[in-house]
Length: 321
Ligand code: ADP
Ligand code: TRP
Image 1: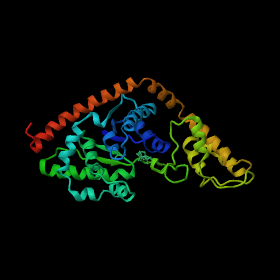
Image 2: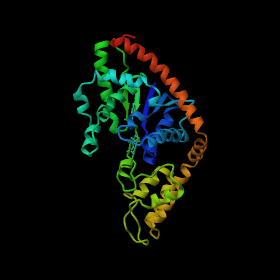
Image 3: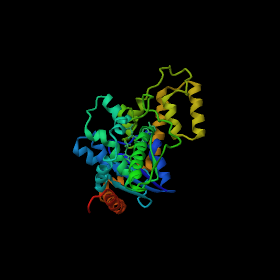
């Protein structure tokens, strides 16, 4: 089965991204033909600083490689390295009713939040459809916010296929099973946009500071503490095994320790958990050429599929050569 995921190059990765998505990707690459690209054209809809966009693009690649994506198993490239996707985007636009895009939640939400609407933001789902349909993808693992985009992709593909026969494979969306949302330091969903993240690759000092900011009840040191709704405990669940969690529960119930102590335990756990990825990241930061080579060879593979598909699509719609 061919599985595709696209990642926007829009900032440092946090532990919500890791447990909500990256971890599953690393598992998926063992059993599927995994395609993964860095969506720099998409990021352009919101990111306007050129240096930052370039830096983020490489940084995302380095981070994914460090966290276990294996270039031998996964085809990994940067969206803008396969220009065919823009041609398909235009062709698909001619098969996309305005109403379909007007109904898109992500566009409506962004406008409601005061983000200036531009055409790229509006037509974003058509480019996403091109990303998917260009490579005959069977399955697209996405978070809930992206389901509608895969549905739009299917709608566009169906419209096209109805007129021209079975040109496009219809993709299924797949929402990861343990999609429980990972809480941020304020208890709401961890997200870059809420500025409540704990980033995977922060320095030890910054990590300590950020964990220190996790919102907790104010209870005196002596008193027993509630672990069930505690944000620190919720995050510990991701990093501790059963025995460690039982031990932590007892520490909460016993009293005599403040939340600061539990935060220290959490910080240690997070720091240790990402030790190997940190080492790998340091290696790739020193050896950027190796990362560029990986992206080049990924783009080469993706381009072979894209070129062949576009020949068929051009002929189908009547582009004369
Ligand atoms: P952000 O909300 O920080 O902008 P993205 O929307 O870029 O994060 O998310 C990238 C991936 O990480 C998506 O697959 C999304 O479902 C997952 N993800 C992000 N935040 C969380 C979270 N708090 N809990 C679970 N999964 C998350
Ligand atoms: N829109 C996706 C996001 O913001 C990123 C993306 C672009 C994507 N093209 C894709 C995801 C194709 C899956 C398939 O997360």
